[in-house]
Image (cartoon, rainbow, N blue to C red; front, side):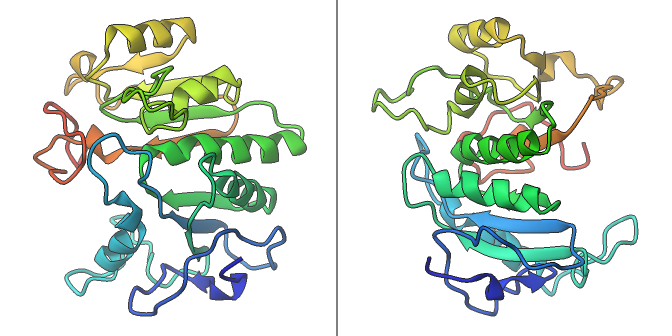
Length: 258
């Protein structure tokens, strides 16, 4: 392991303080008052087009610490200096299956923390969900709902570039559903279904709220969940007017206020 837990800090990681990325996190976390654990995932090797998202965790932190704004949310919560938040730093998976991400997610959930992961391309979702599922099953919880906000369904059964990569960013939910890692998958914002991904969604009973069906009068969709919920957001769910720098931008998406 190229880093230790002593690098974890209260609040968001200050980008002005250089810290080496880790290849794994310890299997035992010391007791703290925090309930949210932030983990950066330096991954973009599974992207089928543009790369650069491996650098995103620190870019997000730098934007958060920008002098252009303060750290308070609209509800008045101070996110900058908050004892409920611990930043674990960045993790660089050492294998294609990203098993270290699964292990990190399992450890964090097992310690009753809420995991907030900064990607990274969307391929990180499969190993993270795998780890969350293991931690929940260990405590007797068999339910796991996924709320997925994305322009794409990421349901491809095969590698869209024909490079025999089962862990492509276009396939995490195919792997998740094949292995029965969630009890329910709800996708919101999809606007690029192919014939294949539609068939996949039907075969696995995926609940889809595509952009065509979402109007100003029906947003947000009325959803309720029974049991734990894993939320994953791909920034291309936003319209390119609001997120022009994503790899696969698709017109007709959500706004930042949405």
